[in-house]
Image (cartoon, rainbow, N blue to C red; front, top):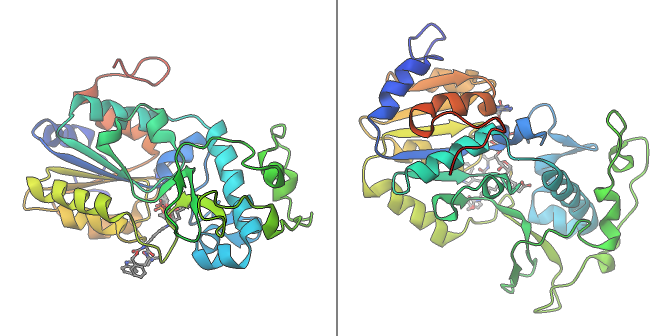
Length: 302
Ligand code: BJW
């Protein structure tokens, strides 16, 4: 779809489709939380010290240096706890409340901002887990939900330091060597005592929760999906990147909401929509016919 196509950035044309829609699926990525100040994975901001963020998100990286991987996640836990859900999270949560049986949100984000925006849990699937779940790295099955300890443990205190605006956190200063965190200082699994505690997120080469995935498949197959919102994701990581096509039927509109949607534009079909811009600005406008206008603080009347 070229930028001069009537459906490129056309909010009135999208509203017409939305008002005729009964079932809506959203697939969210890191770009949704960008306006909350959290970095994305790819492109600018995808480096953590001199490491590609994605190279730290593997079981092999944890096996090799659990202290380094934990520092990365401890820092992200701290950032996420300090951040606030933005108008995009609030708009999706409001849509869920308005359409209890007709809207499901699949999010790749692990930052906890959807639940904190009041998104009903039964209409939210956290495909890649949560920074605030802790599990055993030996797969003994132990899992602890909603652990908001910050710092997570004394050895990771450097990740939970606050600095004044404009100052660099010593942990992120590439000029300063990173203190090694020995394996023995990472808390052990309280269940099997052999494994180490690790973040309850899904790393590359790990399977997503099977029950959750079959539930998503059932929801998609149950009845036609009218609209798929693809929000702030580069759609490079599977299986998440495959859901838009899985849900696509004859009359489905796939709606891309992305700051830099160029890649998606080439792929779009005639019934699709592309919106170029910040998801936090666009989502309240796009969903307004159903959710109404936000209150001054960006939230919606329950
Ligand atoms: C804005 C914005 C603003 C910015 N407003 N927009 C099929 C084909 C090929 C490979 C595979 C396949 N199936 C499985 C694989 C292997 C692999 C995979 O997909 N590899 C690809 C790289 C090719 N997948 C897996 O390993 C998955 N497991 C699996 O499938 O198990 C079975 C299996 C195993 C082995 C082999 C085969 C099958 C697991 C994937 C887990 C991904 N985990 C991570 C880390 C999670 C924990 C953590 O957060 O640290 O998930 S990686 C990272 O990428 C993270 C993200 O959720 C994910 C997606 O990134 P996202 O959200 O799209 O972010 P970005 O940065 O890429 O994009 C941001 C976008 O926002 C950009 O487009 C910006 O323009 C935009 N933007 N500001 C709107 N304000």
